[in-house]
Image 1 (tube, one colour):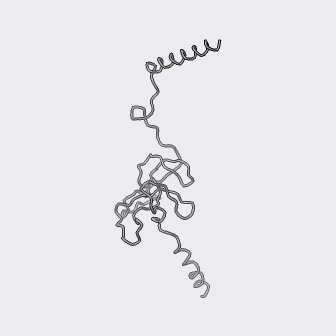
Image 2 (cartoon, helix red, strand yellow; image 1 turned 30 degrees about the vertical axis):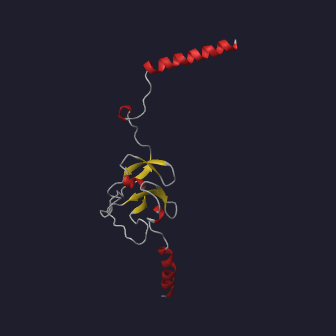
Image 3 (cartoon, helix red, strand yellow; image 1 turned 90 degrees about the horizontal axis):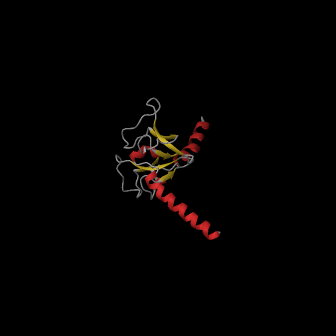
Length: 151
């Protein structure tokens, strides 16, 4: 009977020393990277359904969570191992989103690359020949002048 009591007395203080998720976001802004105890990396996410209490002075509603909680599915994110990933929705069978939070707890950063943005939607475009040809001629004329000076 003494053994379970001793385990309870020793283990209770250890479990109570884990800091709250808002401690990792002290002085940060929403979206800033954060790290909680251990190897857990994420981003500071503002829970808009939370009511910040005056004590402590920290914003208790700015939590260190998986950064995809505040992002849309398919967006780029930073994984816990500091590699880039993509936000993906977890299956309903393995994840339940709590209604008392404003962020999406089931949208998590998974390995992968976000989908490419088509050029007509604001992505990169290659210059067409009408723009590139005059510049190519100017460069060739400059190279020809350099060759004449050396000869």
